[in-house]
Image (tube, rainbow, N blue to C red; front, side):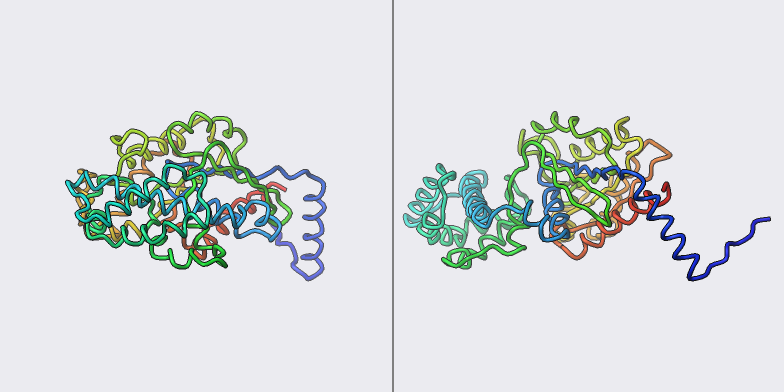
Length: 354
């Protein structure tokens, strides 16, 4: 017969002391979190968010300088307007007045030397950018639900804030930083501590030409954070202009979740960009691109569940449970809740073996 241990204030304190002694007597292994996913999935935005939840020293160490963020904002704006200008011909459209033609020539000339962009150059070209953004043909192709080109998801946000960026006293805020797009190349790591437990988070480039580097990060991974964009069901890879981003992401996930490398690793699926997905399904029917979808195209629950199930059923390991979260990587509060849940789960696993 099992006897229940008496619970008194003294016994609680005693067990806490025993726990601390056990904990201090061991070298706690680093919790390694690996961010995986295709390009443009929002993976690096989640990396930025996780860093932002840490102490001030960690944030300072892993957050780029104000000047670097500002330069990347200018670069994002110029590459976005460049994409729109160059995409007009895909819709058999062109500028009809000389002022817009000349403005586009000046903008494209600056785009040829983006590495030199600074505030004075941006200020000089900003009037042209604003005029082109307001052009009816540019607006027509930007708002066309049938996108024949790829553009930064935050391009409209940046165009709408050009006047703020022009100020000589401009300092990027957290939203600017989260929205600015910089392709991840190579391997980026950050170290931080949670309740005395060391964590390391690793971000790797999602483009196809970056994936051969992934294997260098696969050893001793505690948890894989896999990010896919719900919004990409109708888009293709930038690298080849033909492969479905959805199929590519599902293929990567299938390979990773069933990999021998991650047999002992926890697995978390981020179904990201729910905000954009909710708007897109109103204009671009899901079953036009995922033809086996039998639900209602205007139902967010049915559409998102269908995509989620595609990923969850790709897991062929009956002993592996894949946690999933529907997310908007720009929503700091929601991402913090999700990450804290992941942290708590991993930390509770440590306690259970001490």
